[in-house]
Length: 450
Image (cartoon, rainbow, N blue to C red):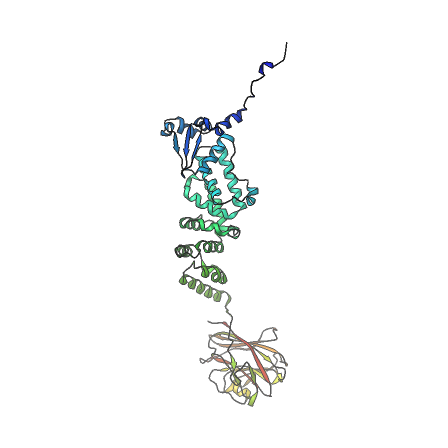
């Protein structure tokens, strides 16, 4: 028996099933229905091929719907999205679904592509194409991780389509925007594509997520783009959702104030709250007076001319804590230098101790290690001073009087005088030298004002 198949000679090769089905898409002669996109683009197809792949198309094109008798069917998708949808129906794949691993090298990863993916995702759900839906969903999720700034485009598109888009995509995009600073570092131009309602949705989304307030302010800074209408929207959002007093003062100045995303009144209130909180927590603000000088010389250097007590030109210290530092200069006999305070308005006297303590109503700490108050010796064993010493005195004005503390060359703090009854007139820093010499005021600071 002959095994020859010569009878098949001249018979053309059979078209494989996959290729045959694909030809229903590629061969325009087989098309019997036109699909018009919302942008006016018309794409033709074979209604039976569409019906085999999607029950929705079957009911639409072969059932009792109006579209079954129409030669042209209108669909709410753009031409490129319809093209991608039909391409997948006939071939099982589509070029619109991007490989996220190569996303950064693809020049066409732009707003249109992302909007197309969101639309394709919605279309795959509508036409009940679960495999296409999975591929598109996975591609979008990974794409957002590779290029976080695309989240703004995704959110805007999802807001347009509403609940028909999987909320997992929306949640992922919102979370990236609220917590990942890379979403504006790589390319902040996409921030501008979102509308005011979308921006507000970002701020309101899921109160269980504590968004990065610095990042949200930077997003607003990119979004306003010197547009006064947008600034007005931004100010309302900041007022409702941002705790300005929790932000770093420097950031408030460089970002919030500079971009105009908060009102002047709101900023001033934040700065005031920060100031009060800092005083409450730390009890100090450093404020250095650069204009303080000695009365006799009008400079930072006091000399022992006529051996008189020299007062500092500085507002009378009536409350709070003030600290000043004096250097014993190299041509001064340190043991005969007296530092301390006198009552404000007290005249200067030649007698050092009388000026400081009996008449002046103050406290004198001498370089010899002794302290006088009210004409009495109250200490004799405090640190002694030497030429070149840097002495820091700290005056605390308390409810029940004053205290004076000191340190030498940055060393340990020691108490010069415990609380004594104060004077309503306040106190002024003073210096006196029993022998010729000079001292220099290095600085004076208000540490705490109560």
